[in-house]
Length: 332
Ligand code: NAD
Image 1 (cartoon, rainbow, N blue to C red):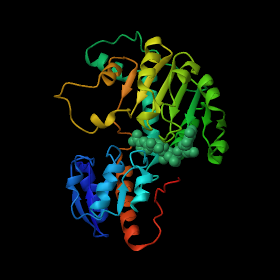
Image 2 (image 1 turned 180 degrees about the vertical axis):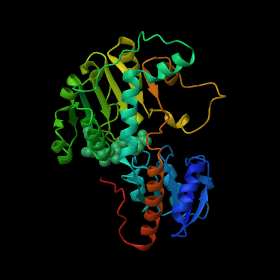
Image 3 (image 1 turned 135 degrees about the vertical axis):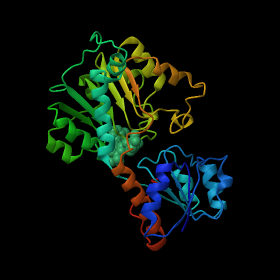
């Protein structure tokens, strides 16, 4: 199968090439992001392989259809950047990598919690400058604190496992309870109760019309004063301007982000010589109690190996079998 791999970085090339050795697909690596502007790069491909910030909207799908593309292979779990309805109308299959390493994201999430609580980011800079004062660096014991996990699928469940090791009380909210979490002692509550009772709220649900701006002025108002908020899921779960208001008032005590609503203009590129144009993002960077990583929670050796293996296997399955196990189907 001829596959155009968009948004390619050096590591994608390495891991996908290795995974493809026994499959023999013809991979063409393109650095550009797939969008309406770059659709002309699609030439003689049966499939395109895309990542989190490629724009697979209705117009792009029309262009793919015109050019004979039959498969969109996402090399990620989330699929909020694909118009599934349009894909279904054009008869283009969409496949994804549902669970490449829940540990990678859950462990990164825990890292953000620990960093913000014990202020590693500030301590690191202070010590390098010979400032050994502890003023302003006080944290709290995680043990016996209440942590809220929103979305207890594969990543949320893994985080619950990790949190039990800290002997925290874990509350969860999901549209469907996960028995593995209940067995761990996780208590399911409604969303408002979770916000009201938790010292830390961590988001692990997908971005969809129901969850867009799940964290907004009203939900922030319900949170405990000074609570920590963590989002390693998708940027659109937060109304970022409302979160900034919450930080300014001290309602949100600290914020850890691995994703951002407008990240596709920023993340995965070296923009260190450019003037930052996003004023909302620039404001977030001014807070001492905000730590942002650039969508790197997935970025472990194990995850990249699994992503590449599943992506290539998805393509092979599409060619050789009527059923694609990892197909994402438009639900109407
Ligand atoms: P998953 O499908 O296994 O779990 C998602 C859970 O969210 C499910 O239990 C589902 O029932 C629940 N959910 C759906 N709608 C909900 C709602 N309205 N309210 C509360 N819960 C709801 O997915 P996963 O593998 O655990 O991944 C979770 C998210 O993490 C993905 O959607 C993706 O956006 C994000 N992610 C981020 C990175 C990263 O590098 N930062 C990497 C992988 C995944």
